[in-house]
Length: 361
Ligand SMILES: *Cc1c(COP(=O)(O)O)cnc(C)c1O
Image (cartoon, rainbow, N blue to C red; front, side, top):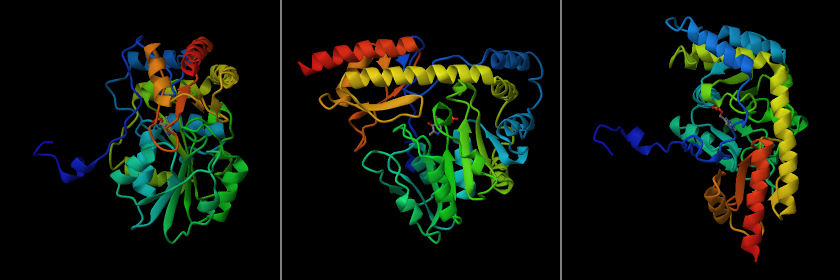
């Protein structure tokens, strides 16, 4: 620690992302990135943006991006916020919409681990709500929350790292029964098998939906994420953003984001390949005795009744396969495995089959 550090910095507990090893060293099944490159049209658009215009600042509000995405979802551009990754949209929403004089927010005990990091960064009190026994989100405690004490609820759908999705009907019930609490649905994995809540935005002023280009559109490297909500909620994020950094996404990222959204064919092709490999992988690893939670995401969450998760992860690592292990009760015996290419999945099955037969004898 350095004498110039403020108390604030000393007390921060930053988020720790999945390991990013040197390229080619491991098969990365640990960060839920896409195993496929971005749309060739997005790459061409970014090349074009690189070739001309970088001496100029980008569109401050990323208006062409917001117009493209609004059209795609049947929204108006003033219902769309664009940030430097959905993490930045989340940061602005915690700062701008979850800080209400000592009121707290609720989120599941097991969910995206950036939520408690932002809550601490912005001094927002929070209560973690346990999952149901089957690891799904039980909305009963959220329905019982008092708006005098609670200003917000946030969870990922499908949830991470459990991969389990909540139905649109359940989300609507929560929105309807808690009209005075802001409900934020983080849809980082929505394109892999569940319905988006965006269709509820016109009817529910207490809903905000978060999405990203990092997973289903293979663009984790350019950092583009969105918030969708009625215009006044979006204005809150814009006010925070413009008090922080008026140009969060650059010209190259804006060009890539637009082209990626317009290339629906490539998007559908790659996400369907991932979903097909997921079904293959689930079937195979269940055959090896693993317990796999029902996944609507581009990853699976699995445990083995006889083998220790730490041991499996290190055996996989020796075979150059990286997966994610959260050493947190009650998920410390689970591994989160990103769906790679079909070939990656087949190699993973081979490795797991060796590990299981070796471990059980
Ligand atoms: C990956 C992920 C994010 C972060 O997305 P970026 O747009 O890359 O910042 C947000 N929420 C959840 C649940 C995620 O899994």
